[in-house]
Length: 568
Figure 1 (cartoon, rainbow, N blue to C red):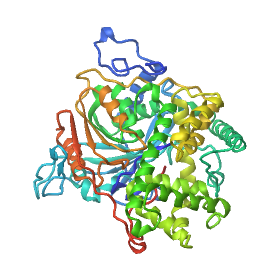
Figure 2: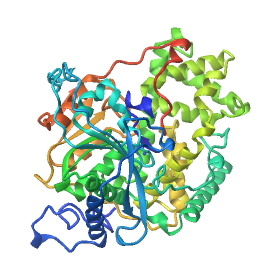
Figure 3: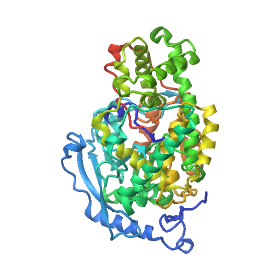
């Protein structure tokens, strides 16, 4: 399951051996943390990255007006940076990554900082200097996750109150990682075929249905290999981290200030392991578990289990507001209403486009973000009253997004399949997911089908890097996590803190929104803002009270809801 963070307010704009085959851990030549006499010879990829970064630093990035295809308005600027397709052959084929930038205005927001009272006392935000200019601090590079998501929209958050003081100090830099958007785009099947609807989504699939999905997974893997050719093996998380190092150099930054969400936290952790001496500040929002044994098969099993808990949270909230929705006064009663809708859609898809598969995808988004809860509950209520329009509006595939959706899925699949070994015996998948589905039926099989092409992958598999840093190798880094996050379960944040020496964990208690930085919690935002602006952090861990639960809304109020559907 793709773990994509689309922040609360930010989303209104726009998923073994302890060393890697092609990169060495911290202290290696690619990450010089040890004395030279103790450093092993540099790998070809390390030498290629250093050469590419040197060239990028000399060339810089020629920022100018953004192409219409990016959908970004002034003052955002766009440019490109060249990186080697294969870092072991830096003089070989080059690909261009698209980059966006919003320049720091230096004005600040004035007034008080964003900090509020958290569970452990006052938030980290302090008083701002109203009317005074804010010192510029270089570039803040953002990756929204995926893998397969584009961060090109990031400069546009500068207009939001939660980002005002940060955007005054930093150039906000987004980019499309390799394979994504217009950065050497990857495709595995025709977009029109990827967007076919309606589809089924049985939580207890038959033997015949499983055979059908296995055949589809084999065909999809073959399509990736056919379309990308020899280039397919170069779409990896390690190469994404190397690309980030080249981007740092192209931006003229001696050290990187980076914010990663969801999968972006894994990318940031790889970078911190490979290049600890090049890290200035890092924010890890909704952390992926970086344990090599988790990447990526076990991580997806854990995710499916966590979504069952979050699915229950949603149903409990709907039951609490039964006077609005009339879907049931208990979570089980709400589930019965949902299953009634699913059964009807299996027999007669809404609008000819929304079947059980589209229904499940729409409600999975409610597992990511609780500001979908009122929208989804209203859609169920209206459907059962005979009005399918809200459900069709929320769940039907959008033809205009078919290309982006297919591209994003292709990159997700390529990166995760290339990154690590996966079971190649269908019986292993069948056993593990059958057992898990007894405990977590909501998401287990759909997650399995999404990742099953990795069982039939033709490109070489890497061995995940052992993410970890030595004491003193990194400056303080900041981890943000919600306790009930399903897309990146909380234990991943604990594991990341254990592996990154000197990191600090800020927890939003009893909350489950995926991607909390810059969102609705002022306490969380206070810690993030203070860290980015000053480098200060709590001692080791801090807690924030949860943001308020969503309120039930009427259809009229729902029409002005601010969050569009995220890429999940």
